[in-house]
Length: 170
Image 1 (cartoon, rainbow, N blue to C red):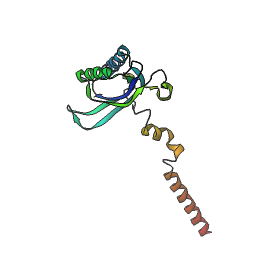
Image 2: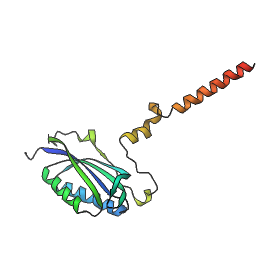
Image 3: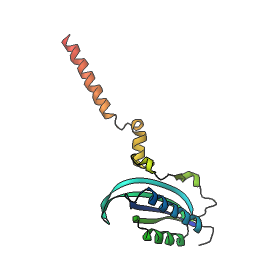
Image 4: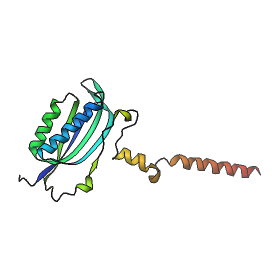
């Protein structure tokens, strides 16, 4: 592999939900510093928020999900996986190679670029759901796509049937 071409990877990290905001921030900072040090190019970061786990992992039933997409060489992925394995905050992580032979000089970063911020202690009460994906589409475009309009159609049917019954009485 030449120095000019990278591979595109995605990494999902599940961390303890009770570890605290400072631990989450330090883990994210460590990942980004490792990317800078090793020459990896971040493409996307999403904070997916707190989710219930399908099964308990190390006695934890909930976890915070972080999603990273980046361009890097294989050596960086080995170092990242090693750092994640050593972290006390990380419950699970998974790295998947998306494509080979990506040239960062011709790659369109603007097309996929999206960087969420980690929540702070002030955001504790807010729902930290995903800002992209199915849940965001339903939340943001539900009215535009017709989701949830079924109730209003039933109400209109009831109103029109009520009007018909009034006319029958006259």
